[in-house]
Length: 222
Image 1 (cartoon, one colour):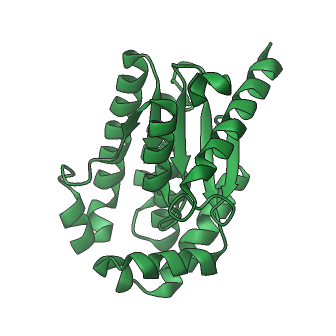
Image 2 (spheres, rainbow, N blue to C red):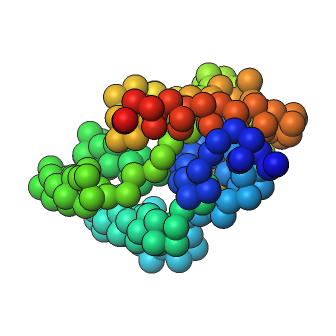
C-alpha cells in the first residue's frame, strides 16, 4: 500500500502549496508528488511576455502582468481538473489578487480603475461555485528570521540584492492574506517542524496530516 492509499487521500485530489519566497514551496511540491505518486504543476516564468517590461516600469505594466497571471493560472487549473486531478500545485491562483494586486494598488503602481477591473474579473472567474477549487491549500509558515535565513542560504543573486524591508513586507502580507482566506480548506505547516531538505522522512507525517484534513472536510460537507 502506498502513502496515498494508507492515509485515504483520493487519487484525483488537487493540493496547492502557498507561502512567501524562501519557505520551500518547490521542495514541498516535489516531495509530496513523489510520495503520493501525483503530477506537479509549476509556474512557467520564462514564457511570461510581460515580466521584463514590468520590472522596467511597474506602473505601466502591473495590470497587464496580473491579467496574464490570472489567465495562465486559470487555464492551468482547468487543465488539471480536466486531466482528472492527482496534482500538487506550486503557488495558488488566489495569491495574485490577495497579495500582489493589492500591494500594487496600495503602493500606487496600479490605479484604482485597473484594480477594480482586475478584481471583478478574478471574482467572476474564480470566486464562484463553478471554479474547480483545490481539495486543500497547504500554507508554509515560518518566522521572518527563518525565511531570511533560507533566502540567504540558497544565494540567488536577485534575492540577495532585494532590500530586507521587502521580505518583511511580503511576510506580513502573506500572513494577513492567509488569516482571512476561505476559498478552500487550509493546512498550515511550520517550516521548522517539516524541513524536507534536512529530514526527508517527515514527508509521511505531512501526508498523514493531509489525509486527515481532507477526510475531515469530506465529513463536514455530508
